[in-house]
Length: 325
Ligand SMILES: C[C@@H](Nc1nc2c(c3cc(-c4cn[nH]c4)ccc13)C(=O)N=C/C2=C\CC1CC1)C(C)(C)C
Image (cartoon, rainbow, N blue to C red; front, side, top):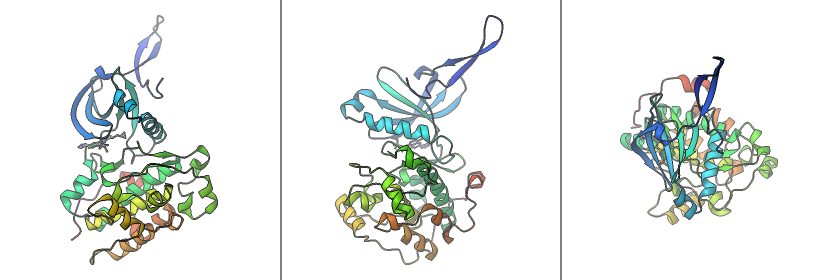
């Protein structure tokens, strides 16, 4: 039985006229499916409208036979478990419920109408400091929440950062996430090697045998196959660099050469790169994960001066997109 499967209730009355709410499971016939929003390696995400309440969702459709054949059942369950833990944050795509028919699994999720951050970045070339500060702050707030729930994303990149109609960020694609055991989930999101407290490091389970997208992979994942919370902060540093420079810091003509650049910390800032942002990124792109700036220190860095953390960050208007020239 899927958790969170029964979400729709229909008000009915019993024989004495007393209102009863009947749990009704929604199915594929309750939706009108629209355009394809994105294709994952084992899934397709479509826009879909709930016929009863006329509300638009994104529905991720997974082919059961394909998943079983490709031995990806574990990843589907990890994604569902991760999404079920990450339900109270505005910066993370929300899973409402799942259902299935004989052929497919369906995840009913928030629709992020603004599409991928990558698309906007490609159109603009670069983001100016104000935009980078705002989008960086929203991403960091969401990463802090994920980590506080014991979830490491492991594949953060501009394609996985979506925008909603208010142009606020929504992080997505948790199929490659690592769920740490309950013990280490309680932290404020800064525990583990990233916080420099070696004892926490021991608590963190070690993730093995998964490598994210080449340009954003952390050195520890390439050298000793260990992903930790600080691996997401490495990717975050790469994304901040990319927003201001218009390209990721480590990019070569093939994956192997990109990996060589990463483990050799072989990257340069463009001459006109803003100094304060450069200082922050230099403290994130550090080979030793335990020496990377922990989240609370990133929030306090002068690059994020003026950002109001917490709920205010999600209520304010997104800045108009401008390029860094
Ligand atoms: C990253 C993902 N792409 C996407 N995943 C999701 C979208 C989404 C929307 C647009 C879009 C909207 N308007 N224009 C484009 C473009 C790509 C999207 C959405 O709205 N809601 C939930 C999503 C994913 C949920 C997933 C955690 C289960 C891939 C490429 C893997 C299919």
